Image (cartoon, rainbow, N blue to C red; front, side, top):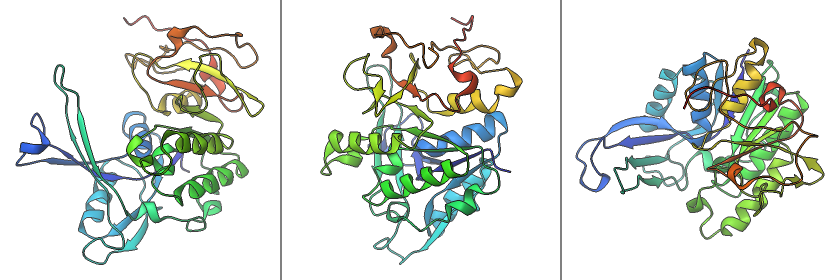
Length: 306
């Protein structure tokens, strides 16, 4: 049985170490992707059984990505392999070059991800009833996958609806990437997609669209949302998943130090939300939690770490 399944793009990440992309002569390579990183972390750090649904061009680069995913302990049996034409005209694999920031110089990411195999996924390409039938507990996707193309939005919505039919908890992370929406409606179009997909979600992490422009804008489409600050670090939906998946043990990892038994978050139970929310809850990310399936995650827990 699989605990968590993610629908996502998995790119080959090039790391120049302490150097810069523009002057690098060698790189280390890793696999990575916004939604994928959640299931890899849950597998490697917490031993949960995870799988990834994606598409890769069937060439040496795609097989390298697969090998890296396997090293991370994530099940690759749900990968859709797309024949390549040798030059990447019809389908290719995404590349992501990332250099570290130092001091006042920010980090730099350069993505090469257009026309990838995963961006060409269409509704009906994946048998979701087969994916969720074996007892999957949690499904995760997000705005990065949804923003890859006009068709991936439909795929995400199809997957989320199927997960709900099977009683699987559905998580969505808007995780806005302006480059994915440039020339395609920008942030307004991304917000429309977020709101469309959030209707299918049990847990949403991220502020775009759902949070609105003011901290008290916490009601959308008749639903009431609990609000959790993830400040001072932007965290993915992994913390929410862990609190639900590990809830039976009564332990929850602290957002700051990682220690079990505490939680570096502030929270309100659904139904007990204040009429307005303080500005200090608007950190570098908001978690918006509909009332279903969130279990112990909505408990206000504190950790003694600084």
